[in-house]
Image (tube, rainbow, N blue to C red):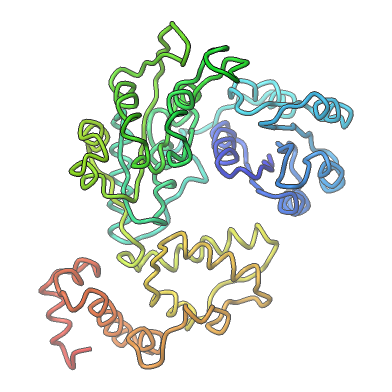
Amino acid sequence: MILVVDDSREFADVLSRELTHRGHAVRCAHSADAGLRLATQDPPRLVFLDLRLGDVSGLEVLDGLRAAAPGAEVVIITAHPEFSSAQAAIRSRVLDYLCKPFPFSELDPVLERVFPGATGEVPVEPPARPAGVEMIGSSRATQQVRVLIKRLAESGVRAALITGESGTGKDLAARLFHASGPRRNGPFIEVNCSAIAEGLFESEFFGHERGAFTGAVTARHGLAEMADGGTLFLDEVGEIPVSSQPKLLRFLEDQSFYRVGGSRKVKVDVQIVAATNRDLRGMVEQWAFRPDLYFRLNVVPIVLPPLRERVEDILPLASFWLAEANAQYAKRIHGFSPDAEMALLACPWPGNVRELRNLIERLVILGSGNCIDLAQLPPEYRPSPGSADDQLTRATTLQDLERAHIQRVLDRVDGNKTKAAGILGISRQTLRTKLEGGSQP
């Protein structure tokens, strides 16, 4: 088993997927304490250890790792290479010292030394998507999104646009898109477009040559070059300044660019997956987003529905994150009481999937028993007495549960039966029949 200890979830996910594709079992931890717990529970043969874990130096964690897994080899990884820390790592007898971002080819000698004779390939047909990239849920809406993402990814399309409310899992959808297509073995580079200043867009995306501007003491690869052979995920693409959008459009057209201060055209093979929670079509009408860039990205729209429209996914998602949080915090909470489950189903989840995940993590951190019950939920997640949500949690028969759920959905769409039927996944006629079959809920 290989353990990756890195406080950057994005980098840990990229490295984990690469190692998984090579046929290795991988576990990830995003803090020093979590890494030590996982190493104690299941001693690894190889550890990739970030040099900086928040306020803790990775070198300070080495002694604990060696005590927990005395036979493990350790590779230091860092985005802040310093000669002194390299010397310390050598003195601590680590196997290697890699500077992020590093090409995956640098993993070959490391893996060969720890797993001699391994081919580095999975002995069976590679899965459509590597382990660790899952879109949990059995609702019709989720199934439709999964099928659409797979079809688009397998087509090799160069650009795709994912839209949806904040917290619906657009980053996960982008990772699934990458993992389902022909570039799955390449890098997945994620960038928050809202964090890039207007004047730095070209340098960040396309890199620069030494001396291109004040402070450019060395040449630097940009995000597009780092993503060569893989996927560049542009989160919050609607935040890219209008003045910078033509540069992105030109890159999308021919997959080539010049580094700032450079005279040689650089050609890459990159897939662009963009995501936003903003109304890009409305921005186009207001000239806040270029129409040609919008239509170039929006070939086949991928729209992620809010969690309130896919109620069937709530409990599977809650169970998945409960297991994940148990492993992260060394807890043994086995599930939810029936009334807690009903309360989760009754919540409107304005923060969508992200809100549910944060709640489950909070419950695990603070929980002390072996089951999460209604009393442990924060007050805002408990139904008000007499409300439709309260009726849902108190339902004792399947018929009562169905009636209460239908009423809850109707309440939230102001009685619009067509919209309610769409959310419930049934026809309007079926909804009418259920409402007329006995007393109306």
